[in-house]
Structures are given as C-alpha cells and as structure tokens.
Amino acid sequence: MTTRQNTNKCNPFLVSNQVKEILTQKGFSSLFNYSDYDYFKNQCKNAFNKAVAIAELFIQEATQEKNDFNEYIF
Picture 1 (tube, helix red, strand yellow):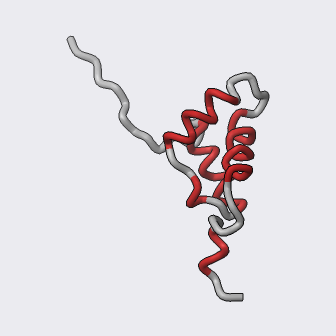
Picture 2: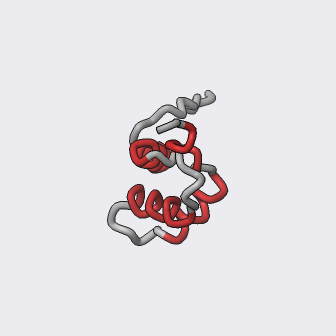
C-alpha cells in the first residue's frame, strides 16, 4: 500500500508564507527569494517569532530603491 503525500503548498502557517505576507504588508514583497530565506532561517533558528525576525533581516539587507512603492508616481 502506498501513501499519498499532500502537495498543497498554499499553507498560511508555513513560515515562508508568513514572511512573504509581512514583506508584502511593508512594501517589500519583491525582496523575497528562497535562497536568502534559507540563509536567514538558519540565522534566526532561536528567535521567538521566526517570521518577523526573517522579514526584518530581508528589510535590513534591502536598499531604498528595492521597495514596491518605487513603481508609483507621487
């Protein structure tokens, strides 16, 4: 008998999805990539709230030109 694994990747409780949501809310959704995510995840393995800590590291590494609001004309 074989078992089937659920391959549904749309789980809101995954840390990566939480990090993406935090970055989107703060206007830095274009910063997210999985290679940096894995690196930051290893750095924040002892953090109380891993998603917030990882998102903060993404934002610290970002430059002012790499946010979502630069596409808009004010």
